[in-house]
Length: 96
Image (cartoon, rainbow, N blue to C red; front, side, top):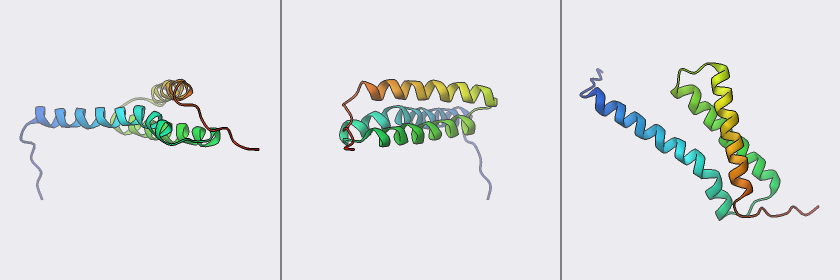
């Protein structure tokens, strides 16, 4: 089976579009989940951790960044997630 690139410009456009859509879903996803579903604080941390891990994997697979660059990008993403989720709908208080 042989794969031929018909147009490198179109292929790059497709790749950029997929990466943009994936990145936006990773950014908006946790806020949307939290706005729709009332969640507890513990699950909120799991939500942030899971989406942060997916973001780190996306950075690793889609860039040629070194480890420290991926770490910085992931730390910034995690900080943005914490801030975004702290200003969206309030979480359900866990009953102790």
